[in-house]
Length: 229
Image (cartoon, rainbow, N blue to C red; front, side, top):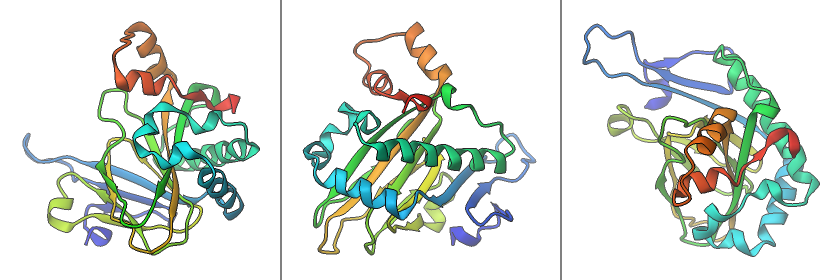
């Protein structure tokens, strides 16, 4: 089981989960570092977000997730959510002995997801390039579902790491970590929100290497600076 795999690093903070490879003794030994933080955005925020997403047609069309930024929508809930995400981000960074960036150095883009009966979120990652930073998933429904994370070098042998979804649960992780949600068989609609965070360096890199035909660049440019939400 991944939960008890010997490469898991123990923390006093129960929200912090991390799997880190051992110091290599040969140049061919595998290497991994998988830090994931599981927290809450709050029931009130989650309930408000579920209501907004359930009434918004674009969230029901999953092929349009790349075309908008939910943090640009004119609801005070997104300001509260942004503040909460930043608090969780700070805690995550401190646990890893990293210095968190200030809000004016971070950008964020989010989108809503609606899963009807038998719909699923296929296996994917949010970013896999040199400017990859952090992503998050927020469950907005109390249904019997999990979000399943695939760890390189480990999951082939020990399976997915499964996070049970509940309303308001927020998971923060490096954007390259692959994950999925199995088909919704609960008989109810499942609502969730996902987001990507980008550094100032990412935006500067795009401005210096602008490619109008790059899907990934166009998506990142939809993001909003966190201190302006």
